[in-house]
Length: 126
Image: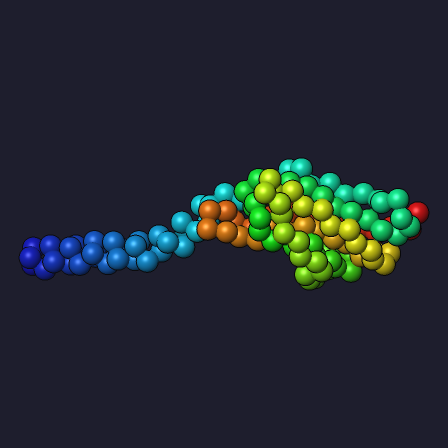
């Protein structure tokens, strides 16, 4: 009877080790840090009904940044414009839209960083 318990315990330990190795890589993907998007700002241009969003993402140099648009703040955001950042990671979007549309800037995931987004604002009646 003791031999059976020993074999069962060894088999259980082997099963736990196997399952832990299968679950491990999924948790490793979540451990990546997000892109730092602290300097994203938006505002009006001198032209009527034309707005801008600009900023700097140091971890996304010479890569695409996405401007997304939705009807309402909690709406389904879809890709609106795509721009490449420069060598320092700076970008600038100019855009127009209807009253009630909302915009956000998205930094897509890379090998070292997870995706991150920053709400830019909604167009409101003046």
